[in-house]
Image 1 (cartoon, rainbow over the protein chains, first blue to last red):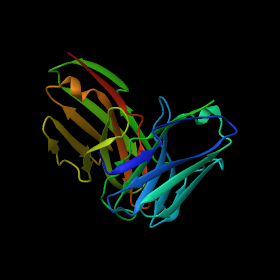
Image 2: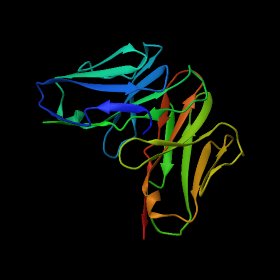
Image 3: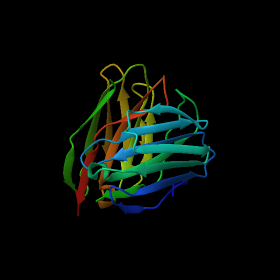
Image 4: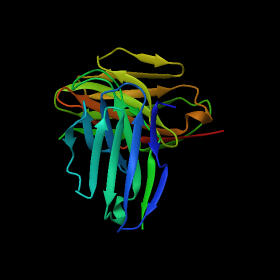
Length: 115
Length: 111
């Protein structure tokens, strides 16, 4: 257990559905991340929140919408997804600001399948 | 654009073998290089390297960074089946909160 939890662990949705992924960290960290991990591709950064403000948005399509209501919670709202969005979505958190020497702690991920 | 390359992408060994995994990078204003182990889902942290030539060690695993040649190696001695995993290398720079990840090396240790 890394102190970062994600729900649900598995999600199957149709292209017209709306769903949300949830991430929670119990480590007192001040930065949270969403990554996408597709088969045979490197981890792709999607969003970074630092002190509850979005500091990076890596050209992610608008059908993915993040929300960070406080420093412990991070959501990824999904709507009108495409089959190529099927992947493992990983949440991570870390303590510190830009340039700090702190590693990320990852949650177990949500395995998303879009039909 | 920051870039991380890992080799080999896949490796199969037998228990007791020693393996060396490679990570090379191109990054603007390098800050740190990290190694993670990913078995089923969540990557778990192994090492953070910031200075050249200083070996980090944890049990049978060790790692070293060469900032001049822009690479790092991860060594695993006396491998065990429990070492089977994907090993990820990531680099961070001084500017942001982002870490750029390599594609990973999938290590399979056979009994």
